[in-house]
Length: 391
Image (cartoon, rainbow, N blue to C red; front, side, top):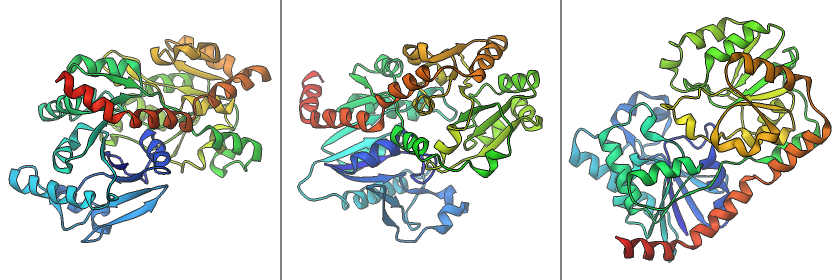
């Protein structure tokens, strides 16, 4: 198939489920990955200035990454201009497809619904990776786009059954769950190779409590700060890029973390280096803020199976979607509970439990997930007929 994948995050940025899935689909399908055309307000960005006027498609990781032309700009306030820009960009994407193969619009956010109209695909796949209507910037137009996607997509899936259930409440449709996974083989290989300890980690004393992922406002920053104050000999190592930095830097919990000597924010690391950090923690943690108004209550954390693949003890906020792993994860509620659970985790456990965590992680690889998705893609003709019969 010709898969035209559209998502808001940069291919070369933090690798999440989109890149993991699409890079594997690219071994058997023609996959193009695009963030869409530039907007007029992008002209001041370094990324726009570094681009070429005519654009290009760069082969990377089994896909062709769209580097959009600087000469083509969207301008939403001017409707005709904006629609024309989308149509021209969609034509450019369509031209990348191999002749005679069905075209699949693989959409990862409702913001790309105008491209679905312009691409005129044979099939539409909606990969909803988050609870978008709980995020900043959600608007009536995006809500309308999502409802259209749910009505017109032939295949809809998300990382959790809870998120899929939320989608089905909006529009009568069938939404499946494809849980997040991990590149477990990369972690196993790093463990077997006993790779060198990263220099910025080697200088941090043990015991170490690790967190790998985005540093964003939905982390329970106050919890981490209070634990660090109570246990000054524990060292909290946070690895990942900041999201929504303007809001993040105004939060009292974030400011407190920056002032604590035993909290270490090491920034984003290339995915090939992450195993070297995770393997050298005493325990790893999922410090999400559990609240009904947050997208985290339907979350299936990307880093869960990375943590399990390391074999180290894991402590997490109580998330419904990962309770099935409770024998291998300690769940904590409130700072006292977290302190007790982390103290136990830092002490370690026997080799049998570590081996069991690694064995469970091996069952949740991205290769396994993509095998399931390949089967679903093979069902697209049938799914389209069924959807049309019901509409």
